[in-house]
Length: 127
Image (cartoon, rainbow, N blue to C red; front, top):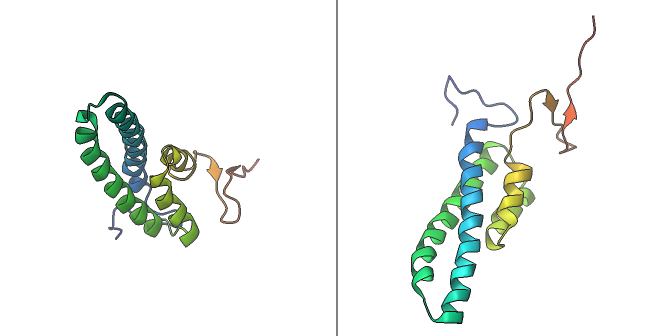
């Protein structure tokens, strides 16, 4: 819920995006490390990596899902985009794509239109 010093417009509260970006990258990275640890577990018989990385990845997975729901609600994402962001958590590199495409704030001087997700330059006035 927005406070008096943090107004929320149509684009939502941009302060939510920074932790979402961090969690997205951390979740994807932990997933890749867990895959390597799993291969080592079955290839060499050393399950230590899975014992350590499994719970870490599990916690990051749950945190990623929770923050994606919060960002989706805050930024008024359509249900389809929300489900894609949540589904990205089960694919090894998909959260990197979510971070790159959906969690970065618009660049300064660029305006996003609801119909077009690509950024376009803001109009400038000439004297």
